[in-house]
Length: 146
Image (cartoon, rainbow, N blue to C red):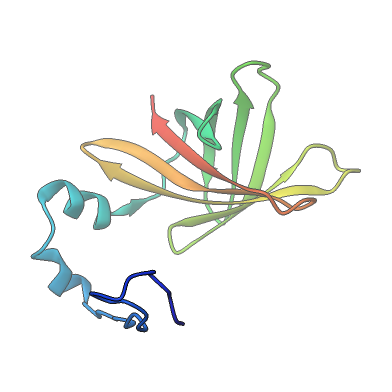
């Protein structure tokens, strides 16, 4: 790629180099502060029978209950403004939840959800994505232990 910076000095009309830095997590660890280490290296966990508060898309407040965690799992959530329960059903693979959202059996799968839970400062937090299968929109999910 060639970027024209409109100046004849400095970088001028030259290609900018592509720099790739490869570090293992072990090597990267020495450059991080304690908070960064805790976030990056937080152990994945599988919560059961826990209530969470959080957001979908950073602006839609929800409450979620992780009911069971085994070969198949179920999380029931509701938007705080209407309290109508919606179920996510799926599996856990390598400490990551892979779920589907069905509003009704006739309507089929509405969304795909991927979630991971971490223990940070003794509290469980969940992060992931909610993908609308009709229009492809992807929203973030943030959950915090009550």
